[in-house]
Length: 476
Ligand SMILES: [Zn+2]
Image 1 (cartoon, rainbow, N blue to C red):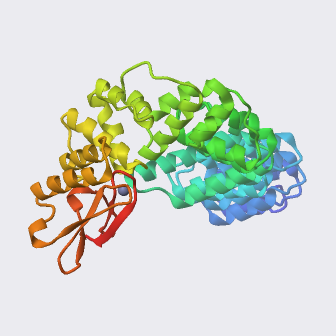
Image 2: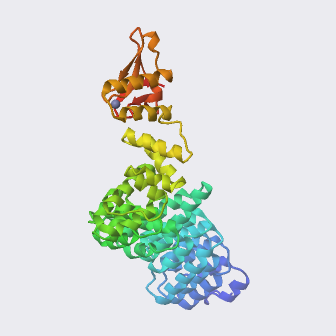
Image 3: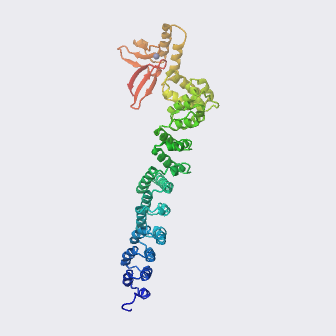
């Protein structure tokens, strides 16, 4: 090698003289510096990384481009920062070389630490062009890379990321439901990123997600739109009131309630009240609510069923089919003959009256109708036959004294009290037998003739089945 000539790059290359090449990176002639950077590409000398990184600040763009290529060829964790910084080079060719290195090479680096560091660095410099590769990295096999990519997308703040983030979140939630396992870190990062993007106005992609096929995606979108709390989302939320899934409809309605939306007196208003299961408000929106009420009937509990029937009555609806809904309708109007005609589909409506009917006369009638349909229940009468007979005596023509005589005979025959043992019957104010009073003054309710309810704490309350008066409460 001549002592004072320019460094002989090809000789150094063939001698694998990394030190010489590194030194040549600072030679005064740019062509030599560039040739040295190019020659360093295949070298694994760790010192080369630092020197090539320094060369990225070279005044000559050709040197910088060659250094980018040399660093890109090495890959690994340590080249990430310098290459990501080169994305901001003022020379377009250097930037392009850096972008190609970072997006194609580093995002696919077999070393997960390199991939994660790349995603993090891209977020730090808010590399707007990195959105696409980062969206791919959101599905990376490594959790750390996924989280870093999500965070980077959050810092870049491009609304393109909204849909992929929703899908990631939905995916984790579905995984949690089906396997009990999900990545909490990924879930949290995606959720925070979505919140940030929504705050900065990424509403359109959320709105678009409302028509996604996957219900988990729609649910995330509707909840986030609802959280925005601005009238600009009311149109999309109102449209979501027609979603095929009740969870989405409810979330949409809650969001609308949150922003003070006034439900109009039409089908969308009816859908709003139905989504909130405020069945009694549905009639405010007119006859458009009828099909909604009818279709909701099968999927709600007994209390809500009563509300639906009430709403249907107010809308002037009448049953067309002899089904369970018709039975509830007739039972609510004490039309037991109709329930009997309907037969088996009435059993549920009749049972609801047995449990919760506010009038005991209705409970007796419902129990009687059920018995006619071949159905009996161990509540709310111990002896329905006796209740029926006693009520018949009470309701018959005749004066009080005569009725009491008949009643006492009936009770004595049925061993409900013992006249020979100087017991007597105590009557309710309506004239129905309520208690037997023993010779020593001890009173006990004639349980067989009364209606009863058992509380969860096993306390039994007895009622007069004729006038609803509470007659006695005893520990069960
Ligand atoms: Zn009474």
